[in-house]
Length: 152
Image (tube, rainbow, N blue to C red; front, side, top):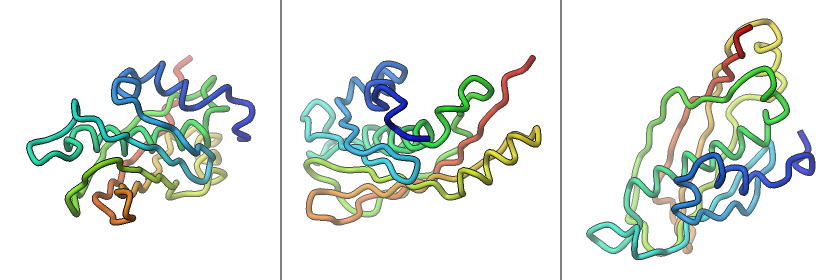
């Protein structure tokens, strides 16, 4: 789905997911292939060692995954609602300063839509990498999403 047809995925996320707005997340890229979301360095969300709190990093990664899901499947909202099914996050290195989450779909959009068209409730993974400004990977998340068809 072309992103031009959506007013702004970042604005939609900040409106429909208040925590994204609370953390002042910046949606710098949102396409069906990739979403990039930035968590600015904010002392109000620091942990005991001065970096972003694990909860803020989880929300950052989950928000990046939600942005790519909206970019890829936003045109399906009349017939299905996207829902996170489960998520797993690994914290790899100390995150300090501004951190960036980059999300990528783990299955082709057409394949997921074919399952939805067949009357199934497709599940699909989104992989998210969290990096600090020097490029070091500080965390990785795998989140499984579904498109739950609306009931008649």
